[in-house]
Each structure stands twice: as C-alpha cells, then as structure tokens.
Length: 220
Ligand code: AMP
Image 1 (cartoon, protein in one colour):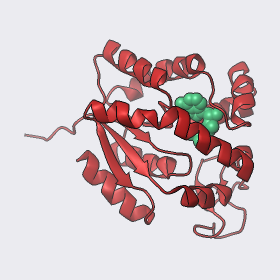
Image 2 (tube, protein in one colour):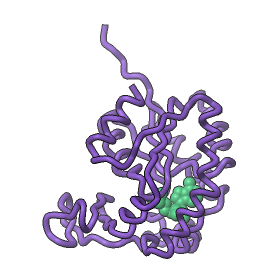
Image 3 (spheres, protein in one colour):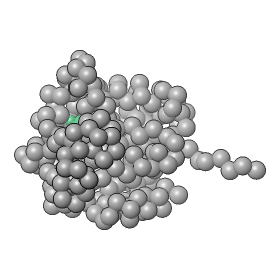
C-alpha cells in the first residue's frame, strides 16, 4: 500500500526576524504545500499599487499591524484556492487573537483544522541584529544578512540576480516598534494555542539547518 502523506496545516508563530519566512519557504517546498506569507502578499499588493496595497503600506511603513478585517479577508480568499486544499504553512498569520479566531472559523467551514503551531523562540538582541542587517530580494523573496549570510556578489540576489533591498520597515526605530507590537498583540497567541494543545516551541537562534531539523521533528 502506498503511504499517503498526512495533510500539513501549520502556523509559524514568532517575532519579526525569528526566521519564519526562511523556514516556511523550505518546509512548504519540501511538502509541496503553499507558503502563505501575509507580509509578502501585502508587499506585493503595495508594489502593484492596488487599493489594498496602498492601505496596507501606510500601516507597514510604521511597523503597525494592518487591520484584522483587511487581513482576514485576504486569508479567506487565499485559503479557498485549490492549492491550499491539502495543506499550507501560514507565515505571519495570525498575529492577533481575533485573527486566530477567524482562522479557526474559516478552517471549520472548509472542514479543516490546524495540525500544529510552531513557535520560534529567539532572544530580542538577536532579533534586532538580524532585522537591521537583513537584505531581501524584491523578486524571489530570498533573504540575506550583511554579515552572517551575505550574497556572493554584494547587493545582488544569488538566486535570481535582482538588486537586493532593505525593507523600509527594517530600520532600527521601526524594528523596535514592531517588536513592541509583537509583544502586545501577537505574544498572547502563545497561550491561546498552548491551551488548545497545538503549540510546539523551537529554539530559533541556531544555524538554519539545526532550526530546520528541529521543525521537522516538531511536525513529524
Ligand atoms: P512580515 O513580513 O510578516 O514581517 O510583515 C510585515 C508587515 O505586514 C507587518 O509589520 C504588518 O504591518 C503587516 N502584516 C503582515 N501580516 C499581518 C497580519 N497577520 N496582521 C496584520 N498585519 C500584518
């Protein structure tokens, strides 16, 4: 009998700079499910100049959260697409309790439920170091760090050759604000998911490969 891979419906939870995006990209590709990153979706909408993008940009540039109803509408549309039927890795959503409640309702309507919520635990000093040195590719979304993970050619994406940029919300002042917003609005989700028996904590400070192995153990 052929083994059928179990559906993988995951949430990656953690502060900005914890490495969620890097790990979500890898895990989603390995399991042939979409990585659904609300930050990437909003940045794409902003650079395409859509009305949603224009609204979102005004919040993102300040390091504030986009209103719940906007983001919930975006996720509802995305989860209804056929490629999300057999699983997904949610990266950066939910970020508030009302978003988590809306997600439970949306999945319930689709006859689905979350399998696991992976929390990336990283000390604040390390988050600041990572975010302020982060450079990203606006085309393929690959990320680099000016010191610990530089591209082969300075300022150029190894994977697609595009010019790397610093995200406008990765300046030190905005990063500090994003960390405060995380502590106030998103950290309560740890208890929310712990109480539902879904939370698995992964130490997110080590090398990318070690974190990846810990995630694979947590979802096995
Ligand atoms: P990220 O790329 O995940 O760090 O997200 C960048 C920015 O997009 C955040 O600082 C918020 O302004 C916005 N954003 C992304 N996801 C959400 C969400 N689930 N709820 C509200 N705002 C979000």
